[in-house]
Amino acid sequence: MTTPPGDDAHFVTLHAAVVLIAAVLIGLTAGGLAFLGGTGPALAVLAGLSAAGAAVPVLHGLIR
Image 1 (tube, one colour):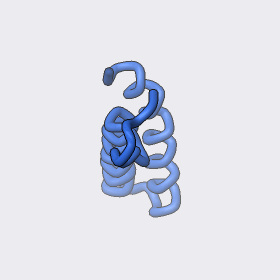
Image 2 (image 1 turned 45 degrees about the horizontal axis):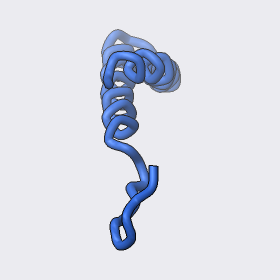
Image 3 (image 1 turned 180 degrees about the horizontal axis):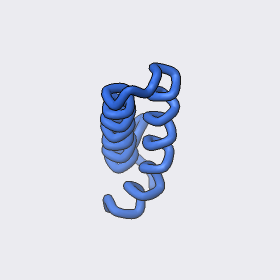
């Protein structure tokens, strides 16, 4: 896809931004709940990162 002259090209597409923001929110929620459940901070961060990483392909397929 080409952009007309004078039109700024976007750094990130809207689809990618929505998927990444939703994955970050899912990761923060999972990490926060893990921490509140009594898990140590390091393991809560790992839980949040793994949840966010697992959410990206699922969200990519669901959001179109």
